[in-house]
Image (cartoon, rainbow, N blue to C red; front, side, top):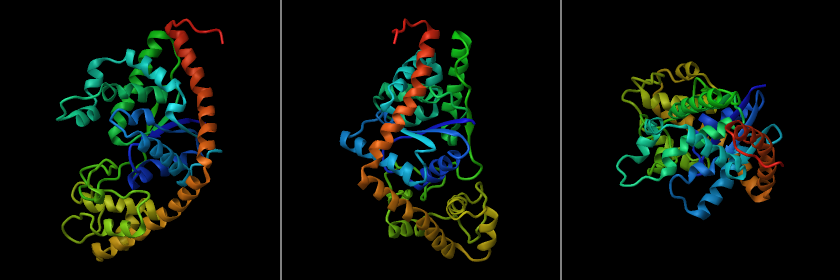
Amino acid sequence: MKRVLSGIQPSGTLTLGNYVGALKNFVKLQHECECYFSVVDLHAVTVPQEPAALRDQTEAVAALFIAAGIDPAKAVVFVQSHVSAHAELGWLMTTLAYMGELERMTQFKDKSAGKESVGAGLFVYPTLMAADILLYNADLVPVGDDQKQHLELTRDLAGRFNARFGELFTIPEPYIPEVGARIMSLDDASKKMSKSNPNPASYISLLDEPDAIRKKISRAVTDSGREIRYDPKEKPEISNLMTIYANCAGLSLADIERKYEGVGYGPFKKDLAEAVVSVLEPLQQKYRDIRSSGEIGRILEEGAGKASAVAERTLRRAKELMGFLLPRS
């Protein structure tokens, strides 16, 4: 059974893009692989966070994992900072990385553009991401296109460590589903749907009320013409909406094209909104039940124990190979 590691930052409300691009695949993978799913709070603080909001969002994201269908009896769900090995191996990976490698990271360039000062954490966070993956010797890492560069660095660091100190780390492979790996913004299909977008109409939050979802989809930007056709190059806006529909309604893109042939955007958007609502309404009810029950605390405590058992073994072996003097116990 292959091992999978992935995580989501608690730096804002999760969106439909997170559900389609990540959570939905997590639910599928838990039945096929040994899975470790983390709320990566150490990554979140690479940019300033309000402490109370960070605590609340960390628990909220963990609860959304469960509400989306991740079963803590099948997959390990934990908070990154609850397993101290992440930070320690992250530092060891930083010592193996080169400045030039980190300077080439596209996300660092994008997030630092135009700023007078940039935190060092933002610069070195790809080495912490590498540690997240390598601690569990993950075979597969679900990533969007925007994270493939970081996974390539992880592969390079794993190979560099193995060559210099001895074989320890598995070289991970990306897991990228054919459809839905990247859901784009409702107001600009050239940009990824993001919880950090200052325009709330650009994304659908997993906790948006049904009427808010309907309004956002009705106002979503569409291409010129009336044809419902999947063509990301020529019709990026409608292709993005079709991808959302396919993932929420369980239809193929070809099915959607046939269903709305000659119909136009109005009826398509109306049906799309109901498909999204039908997915998110039960998820939201489960989320409310989990938060009110307080059960998430127990789930995260158990998850941290399971994750630590694996991570600490890997960290100890890495330190041993690097020449650290280890305590006896």
